[in-house]
Length: 144
Image 1 (spheres, rainbow, N blue to C red):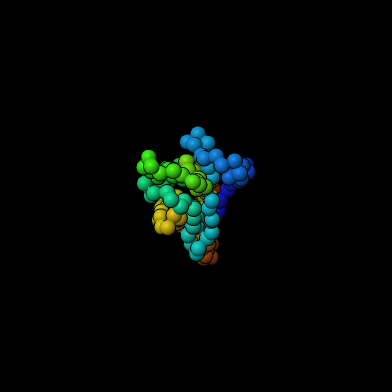
Image 2 (image 1 turned 90 degrees about the vertical axis):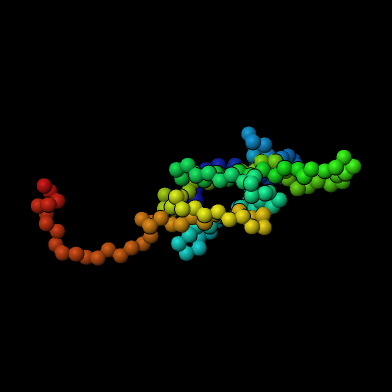
């Protein structure tokens, strides 16, 4: 149901983790995700801990799904001295090419406990259906 568009994204994610760099708007970090089918719905779950729902942007243009989010640093008083900071900050993004068999007009999004879950129904035209055998076809109507 999904088609990967950039085979080097996973390598970029590993390099960013090892180097400790944060994502920017021009070069966002990759957000981890799971994708699976649950009956007639395709489910995609993105890990976005510490990101407020207002900082998440979801767009669909044709069959390209884009999810962007930004985790900003927490404002600290002048008297606070940071001893350790390991949680990544910055911009996170993921673009996914969706198959034509998904109904992009009816995507539902939920955000709970730092997980953004998108539910995309399978399009009616893509569901299996029975074809009944009818009467004979009048060949004159077809040819002329």
